[in-house]
Image (cartoon, rainbow, N blue to C red; front, side, top):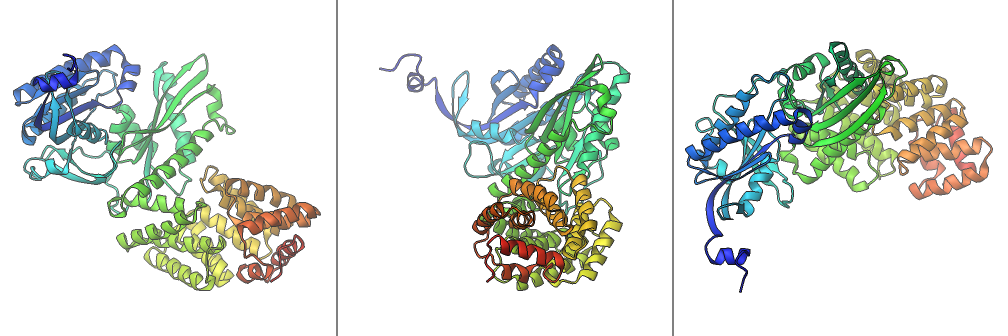
Length: 598
């Protein structure tokens, strides 16, 4: 016989019974941060708001099942009644945020699901409960996130303004769930920034000036200095749009949480944090938060002398910036892998594809082309997808994956031309076109025109600099190429595809006859990406010319593992340097190290 307190006994006696209806789940966003920042003030404010919400539930025909800490679980008989009460609940929270006197605002996430569940007088259990909680976890403030069956009972523009969020993967659920955001009719929070283009092809990031934990007005400027340092470093990345500090400062002035700041600025990612300045020493915490999920993707703490922030040699945030770029690219790749292409935002497709085409796994590289092709079809008037797809073909040939380099060179050239037709003043499209003309058409004069134009449009376009260095080193102008390659590296010091920069710097140094410098860059390229053959080719030839034949032969053995079909003849056939001294020197180094002629 079951114990009187057991679930089986409670079910048998009717204390635990099946019910059906609507479950709602309310969760305070970033409650840990709020508690740490405002302590008892936050708790007192939330208790007052929670009590008002509980009274609303009773008035609207619902009931509060559980109310603990920073969450509320409620039950209603039908979705529209639940929605009305939840909209009023969100209004209560927003009104309470109107006069904060320095405290951080409270924002709630709300999920709603319909289904069957087990309930007793104290709690509720089952799939509907879990689904409501997971929907709330999508992290969208001032909206109710609902499943498809709940949305089916609502009329868009009458019951609510409804936004389709597409197929969403929720924590601990294997299959994606179609989710929708409900907002009150006619109430849309105006963005603090102009609306972004529909064809937003790289993610947008905002850096909010850091909040001072303590210290007078004189210390407040440190938060702006730190934000400026981060914005300056991130602005050189081709993988991000960076919002200006003047725009992002609005979020600090209004004391918005990262989630609300990202919504207001229409940023896909937001960097925020806090700092304290005590006895001329600054301690700061930085966080990278993703708007779509509300998840913190990166967090790091710093401690440094205050005067170090204003020196030209300061590099204290380099590790955070490098980690941020890796986190963004990794997150977009994961999103591409776990969702179907039609439901992904365009910036996820582009950044995910660009990252995947630089990865070692051949299946990732192949999938990158499919993604770029889908993106080009989605945005037929945008140059970037065409330009990156052209770049993909050049990397395919460089990696030795191509069975017909000439044909794929022609395809790359056509794509690059199409990109320039769509946007003649797009620096990246021009830079890729210069690379194509160099690597495939061997039309060096035309390549130089494209690359010069790209640099005129944007002197800091790293790929224009990088491809110009490649053009110069192929044509025996290594002395000019190497400083340009170094400048590209300096402008994008945290590029996740650093191996590509190092490989071109290695080739440029080799072209200049700086074999020891070429070897150092080749080693760095190999360390970052062991399967990219360019670095290993330069390393092998540089070792031979440095008079280190045993090491050169060992390097050649490793190179042949990467490129099993490599011969000197094949390399000369595909290299733009074949008719120049640098090509003959590199071929001689490969030959001397044991790479077969035919």
